[in-house]
Image 1: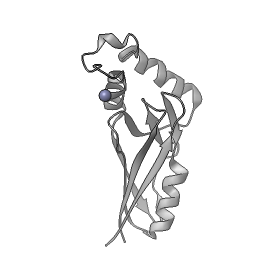
Image 2: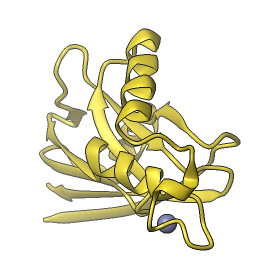
Image 3: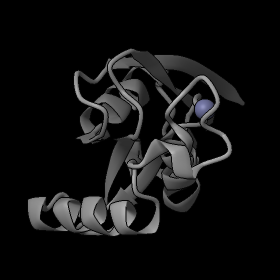
Image 4: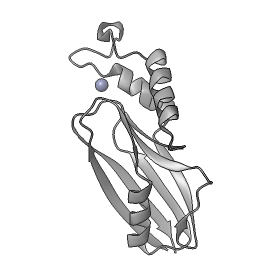
Length: 138
Ligand code: ZN
């Protein structure tokens, strides 16, 4: 069995953003040389997510609005976690959107559904953060 590991770094200039990282994950798969197996892709930070959904800007705005209703950033004083920091909402948003995805690799390709794309969800940006890509198989 082959094994591949890479860290993808991101520096999102805003507090929140969704980045389509499918091309980067595909690049990793190409580098790995693996034809049959699994890709694990996870955020390495507790205020960011990796998830799969549609690359559609209206939907991304819907996520943003929905998450902001669930866990508003302001007022930061509403959260017990916010002692010396202001990112409690980011921890909660991350929990809802998930830590990782697993994608099958078939014949050297990401075996995604027709509209599935892999996203990095940033909820407390403006600093360097990373995603782990681990691929195993043959
Ligand atoms: Zn925190």
